[in-house]
Length: 618
Image (cartoon, rainbow, N blue to C red; front, side):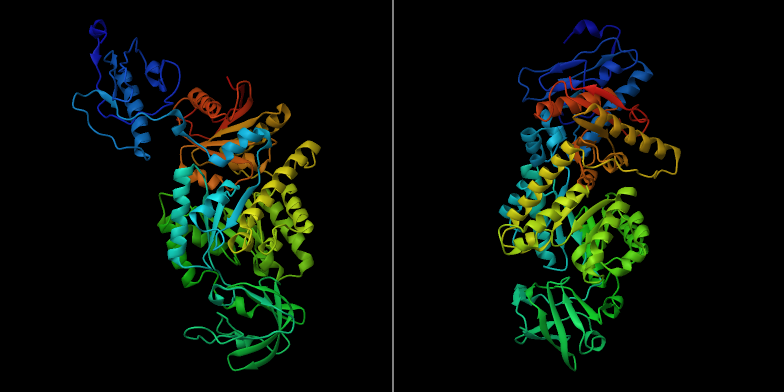
């Protein structure tokens, strides 16, 4: 093979073979799907030779002949190290080749190194980049949508995040759901993030043997702390709080599940509290209870319970073991409990990022609201439980305050509870529910969450479809009418590098909007740039390229961010060209599309750190 080239050259053996990976990069040689670029950039390398058998299904071999120079060897080592890292990230293992040549042992198509959620990709191809949905959708998984077929239906319907509520179901059941979700992600190309929700410090009823009850006006029921073997007596509910009978008095009101049903205490006999229904409704398993007296909530019950119980810590260990992406803390009271959990998770899972979400659903959390948001990775506004502890007319203003603070502090905000509550029983939502969802989309919250509608409703797929179609329509209307005015966002950074990144993201958003770019590209290994871009709510989608599948799941919670797994090159131009080429090949972009590109890759990895590039897709 090019024997003449051997004169004056020594063979540098690349000792370890790696799986054949398409898209290594750019300019020197392109045969089939295989590209080699680092070789052409080696110092003092005047020539090289590549050998490709006719049958590319067989092993591909190449031997590099180059001048025996120190710097050249270092560059070759960089190339090998980069390929080894790629192989160690989940591809087939390396093996030693006897003849010392560098052998590429497996061919894989170019699309394998660019991983994007298949449903998002389909939506982009059908509607165009600028019309893709920005609002993320969270679905609580329950009996109504837990089978593989049902989960696939929800994923196809636009579910970005699957929520597991540890208040319901066994660990075995949750483990099976997680396994089903992971299998769908692997086989169908979905990118579903998994969020686990702790039970928290709530006073709640028993599981009702998994049944629901229609409670009518005047019905009499007994609430008891006694534990029965087998089934409960007729018209009896179990309560998990031991001091329940002592805390309530005759005349108190028991508000169930944020007001779905309301009872009045009419008699107390030992551990049994006899009540009469004064507001009828549907009673669900493990519904939470709040106590009201003379128009004010009584907090003795929940204040006697820890924010994280012994059961919650066992559930958290379960979530870490199963590698969930987020853990949500219910009924957070202070920022300290969030910091405590983050420290614990970091110690138990040092190699993997797990986000911690704070649920704002109690009066106590409002006292330390800003600090709770600052230390969290995101926030859930639990309107149902919150509405059971503060006057109903205050819920909208509190919700708006939380949304505003999260935007200012660059935290993801999810609004939950009773979005389309009527769809638990009926196939269409009320007009008021549609208006509520539309207003949340107009406020540009990061995500909307279904609870009972998807977990145990009769129409989980239709409920999800309502959120998706309303989000798409409202987002488009806001862009067309320029309804949402740019917000004045305060500076977050307190160091010069962080300030530079923040200002670059602000400027990139301004330029993308002004130039009507099709997309913003951001290259990241785990930095803040994707979230800073999302914070600005640009008119175009944000393609966040990362080489970490774990971080990709974290980004999946952010408004307008389309996370994509891409193996990075050392060179800026190769990253840009690879992304554009592969997106174009998948039909997600076309030649001539205008993009704005930024990066927070480390300086020794890319020279794009402090720059904004504007270019058209070739």
